[in-house]
Image 1: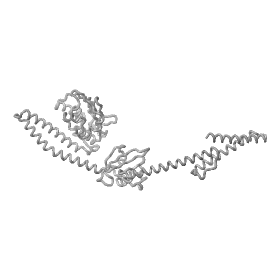
Image 2: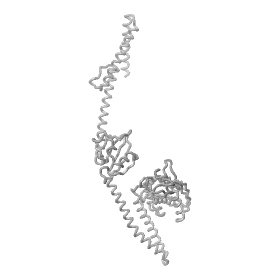
Image 3: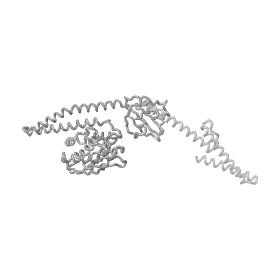
Length: 438
């Protein structure tokens, strides 16, 4: 590049010198030198104009303008850049074709659409699961093709990355799992999966658990009744009485498990409508739960209640009472006597009615938190049995929260206690006047 620059300067100096010499011969050196210099500048501009015209016409190699010096180097660099660009485009084209080929054969239906919901791409599976054809429907609005109300609701309001189960738009007995994911600037990827078999297995499991629980309830009631009758007899030896008392404890525990399983079978997959339910005085229910714990099991914990008496929730009173009772009872079971349990019932910063039950107990390791609401999951199995836990309490709380459109949140630090929260949607707040009118 430096050599070419020097050559270009040499040419200009030569033209200028020739102009001065000719100018001296005619008696006007400066004027002639200026004319030669201007002519050289004009020649450079013509060369540049030829290159620009060539670029605008597509910069074909066969039509490159004749150049010299630095302009010749510019043309060479353009040739080289175009060759590299062609290689890159071919590489991208091959990669894109490979990706499209792989994505087209994915078992999950995949549809890409923009901010105006115009379909940009779809794979083969979208044809069978969503009735969206990869060629015919490209450029169409996805909400013009998926017109079922549930689908339109999902497209308009579903959260990113959250799985939603809906019936297939074409086959009602087929269930789809739908997820929306952001993909690049203004683009969204819709992924649909056929989960019909998974749903059937889940329903079969629920039916099985419910049937078994119903079948166990009657014999357990009989066993518990006879145990109570036998233990009332005065002629039983202390050894036999202790053995029967242990049997009664275990039968009572089994009874609680059966009742909880039946409760779960009613809650799971059965959401309440947004305006369905009755007004519930949650503050009063919390006070009642604390008093019952003190009377029935002699709890000597310290309870710090911070509740909004005027905050009324719309929902199922029995279910909300069960969820509150489970959270407070758990805090009592897993903390030492004399511990402080804080209970809060207020609107949070997003105007959502929120119940928080906190304790200053031993806390829970972080690896256990995401599994605490699973059925029968225990952090310390031995201690749970000692305290009479069934391993179903938090599962019930989670499903009560979900049934009411809310969520269960758990925060715990080892050695610093635990906090369990239920956030209900703001739409479930109702007014005192509604209660007084009943």
